Length: 154
Image 1 (cartoon, rainbow, N blue to C red):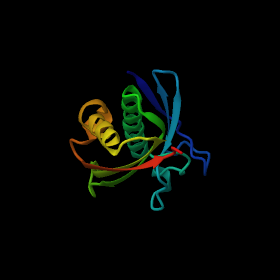
Image 2 (cartoon, one colour):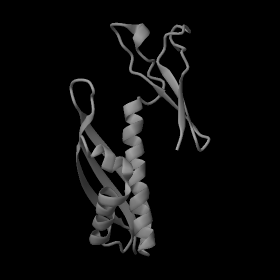
Image 3 (cartoon, rainbow, N blue to C red):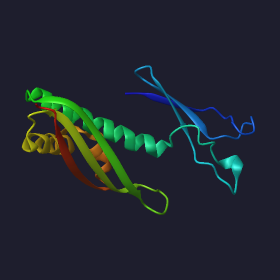
């Protein structure tokens, strides 16, 4: 896997080469823009809030990784899954490096006649075996999960 991240160097506010916007080009040929938070004390060091922060993309990628696993595990088990979303909330260390210290993932899984046990098992398998992002972040963060089922049978 490869990715090239390049500083665009442009401030949207001033047009100068002082912004904190970065463009990531992935090995699969996709692009992602990231930006820093504005810095009121030193505007030349801050971003313009034009895109997600790099750590927000880490959290989003983790959610995508685990939701992908949950859906795939349920589909492979021949469960009639129709939707899956996961809301992640996190806490970070107050000092540098500001690693994630707590992450909670709340899944909403929609389908026909899904059992709570199957969903719980799929989430556990993702977190214990398949989702490399969750397993990696689990080295610094306490990761907890919850879920709810939305049954569209009927």
